[in-house]
Length: 208
Image (cartoon, rainbow, N blue to C red; front, side, top):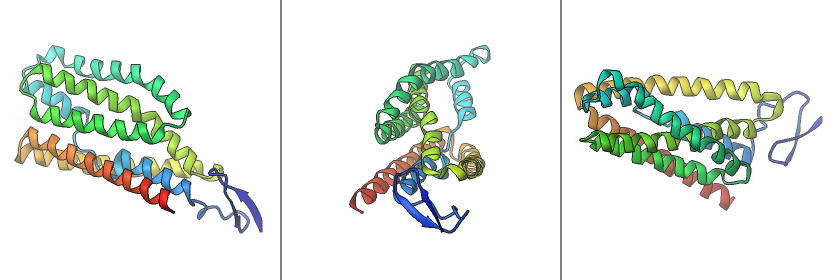
């Protein structure tokens, strides 16, 4: 029998080499949060839908790269302070605010009748990315035992890819059958479910 110290500072007695069942307590919560917020709860409406939405609103083809520039400038500006906040223990708050920013962006994209509202939505979208994208990898690394981190990241990205495929199918179907607005309304709805799930997971963990 080998005594293994897990990342949440609890110890578990496991048979030698058997680490598959080592996700307990806080580790489970952190991994659940990362998967839930990222792509296991499907986020409909990826970057390509945003670009197409810009063209629907009359943005000239030559100006389309500006869409990605605005999102990434905001993302870049927010990512570093968000990382500092995560290191200081504000991870739950970052996830919550990131999801709220995403919900706001999706609602603005659904309701946009002008390029002004559209670019306001881009700022919120970039804010969401800056608050959450680096944090997701941190949560996976925290949740997984050191000997299984490679496997954990593999599972995480596999789930992300499967969810992205599902999201793309749903978004394309909604866009074709219901129009652009309902694609982003659906995205906001999925994000709201993710937010409720995140809060419920944390509340359950706090009572145990």
